[in-house]
Image 1: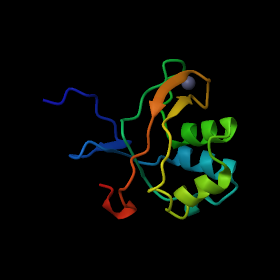
Image 2: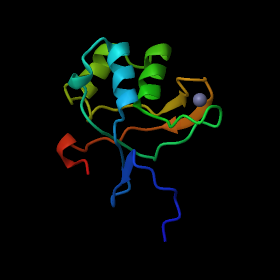
Image 3: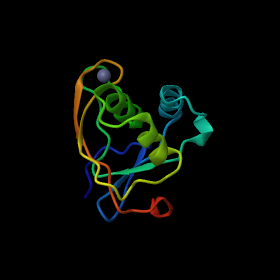
Length: 124
Ligand SMILES: [Zn+2]
């Protein structure tokens, strides 16, 4: 029996990947950081692990934290992120796991890894 707490912001798939369902605050934050329209951003992302809840402020980990950290640490530039999130390409590239900090309070949230080699259309 699955004893995990269920959240409505992610879907666990039978293959072990977890689809993070993009939430409006994530979308608007990412749009402002990347200077694109929120409607340009692709929907959900497929991750190797479920979202976590920040021990510092209670925020749910999200794509906003990933983007915030990537830009801040220079892991990815905005062009790469736009390629993935807006154009939906680049999923077959080697993408390193990120140590992610909460974009709201800076608390470490753990290490996150994109799922690779899964097409956008096969999400849920
Ligand atoms: Zn936090």
